[in-house]
Image (tube, rainbow, N blue to C red; front, side, top):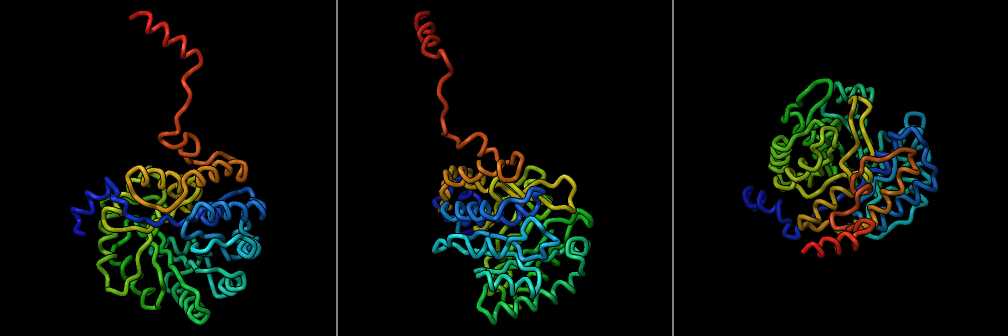
Length: 331
């Protein structure tokens, strides 16, 4: 399909299948000050599974000291109900985390490293070269154990401390991980700096890499209100895999004012209206999102959770029959 056809297709969907990967249970909850009880985390993941999401990032095997909100990672991953066809992923920072994830039966490792040297140092306390060396050891262990690996590349679309990130660096670091044999690459707009024409250029450049390049996933934040626009731009450029977070939870501690990831139920709602097939039960998603405020102790960004779907109709106002009768009586 050429670019013009894809751009036209983005407006009518043509029942094209898109995959929505849920990251809220990890990327969202790790930013919350309130500790969500373990049993509630398990129930949340089970609800997401029941909604038919093809991949759920369940938790993180980072040190509990660093991320206390996810200190129950092993219990959650072991005790969730596993739906056939759903991949249960976990963030793994190092070999020790990988060993813990293996014991807890993670279906996939998600590794994280920034394209930006400054962001990588601020976020991971390592240079990019040091991160790559450590993550290469995780990839080697994963290959021994038969666990697929996805690598999420932070700050692909801009760094809040360095500014624009060279596309050549994005592609070069992707190539290094592909050469290690990873199964997936996620291009992350970690701090919400992406804009549609930039997204199109990055997606097209990534897809132009060698034939062994795994399908890319796009990970957008809605910090500057362009989340959905960026998703549509990526679709027009040929992308079909997207991370999203239930309720729009998430954020980045190194980007003041950064909001959460694009909201799962908002993205699914918009794409289904446009004729795309996500395979996700939107009503089940909305029901799960509406339970979030009680879990995290505050309102969540999701407008769909607040307003409902486009055709969730409301009753006419009180006294409507009398209003109609008076109007008809006036001729």
